[in-house]
Length: 383
Ligand SMILES: *Cc1c(COP(=O)(O)O)cnc(C)c1O
Image (tube, rainbow, N blue to C red; front, side, top):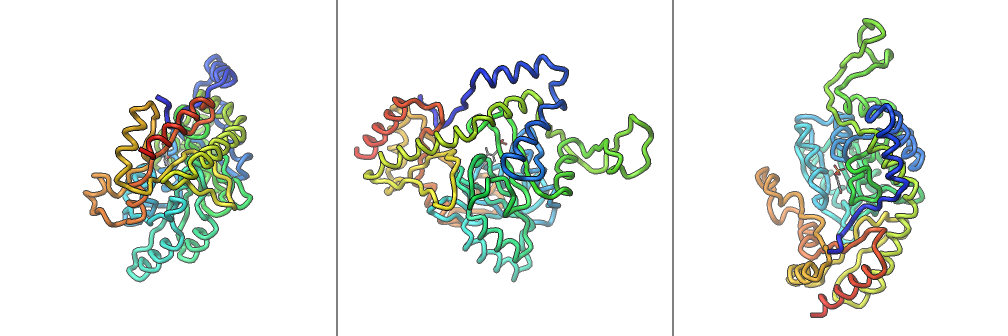
């Protein structure tokens, strides 16, 4: 089976991991700050805080922005469940903004009209999490402008999008947000096995993220709330978790990071190749906007006839093409149905879901694998 995504591991990565295994620190050593500094520098953000997953980083980000019981978080229904679940972790209410059918990203116009209604009802969200679906940035200058008008904080879920660019700024620069979060799960653009990172330009937010990652404990005398007992002292000044990344993971991530621009270039060239090959088929190819560079995490075709999705999907799987569906709209998951969401709530997201199929997209895909995907898709669509 040709998978829809897979990691690319080179000798350089293996050696970096072995070096940590032979060193004094498997965790809480020098590799994590090195990885954080490298990502901060790459994306042009002041601060970067690593975590053991993007889910943890999103949770820490919500906490750092003060999201709690009685507050509301809005995200996109077309995302992995984590983008919504982190609001529930904080005891907040979760709601969704429907997508722009061309980009599968949160629609700024729908965001505005929903914020107008929420203001009238006194139910404005505290935080929104736009998701850079497939690695293509949301329309962040629009979203930023609208959110600021209503005093709403922004966390970019850039799990798909490290290496992407929006209007000249790297995704993660937080030009149009309070915090950006990346994922380093093996199917994403670069990997640390499990891992995530939050970037920000706000020192207070960075401090809160760091505290949340490690039990709310500080060893920094400047942050301690009472006089120090002695050189051994550490003080827990808030409630935090153990969301730390290990040095083994950070070394892998740092090594992978050196090939990020290569990965993004190869992914874009695979997308170009697919675009040309599928041009005349009865399907819609994804749109890449002129003012952004997509990291091309996923390549998603949409069948013009939704009733063909299941047979085409089954045909491709049977032919050894590891297609997938990203994503089942979050509001249709049983957990969210139980919280009052229903079919029909987000019609654009549901229409998108009824037609979408994710094709194999990973930098180590061989020419013959890609040719097999293309010929099999063509056959499946024409049947
Ligand atoms: C993968 C993913 C996450 C979660 O990432 P983990 O590192 O696995 O926790 C969150 N949001 C989106 C959009 C993702 O694709």
